[in-house]
Length: 97
Image (cartoon, rainbow, N blue to C red; front, side, top):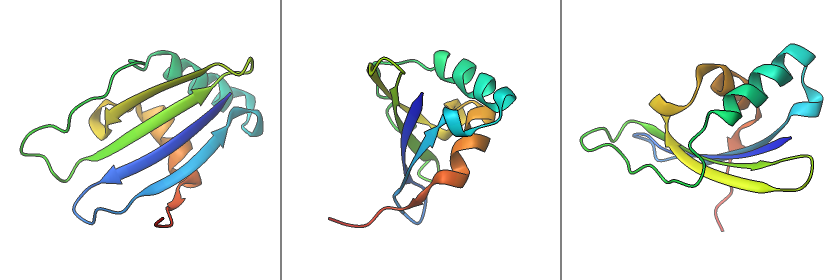
């Protein structure tokens, strides 16, 4: 499973992107990531919460082993902590353009 991630928002407005490939994780981290992904509310785009401009927003596109793609956009307080810990290290500054 691959998880393509774009993170935006916050006070700085920086956009980051990265890809997490669960095949490159330890077995227990793969299980954690896949279980966390299954619990995401796919097919919806969460609006930014009013009065909370500091929150990060995550757009995740999951590509399953069979090639099926599913996307979801969540606010940082909706992202499962175990998934956040795995995707943060793969994020890099997105180049404009």
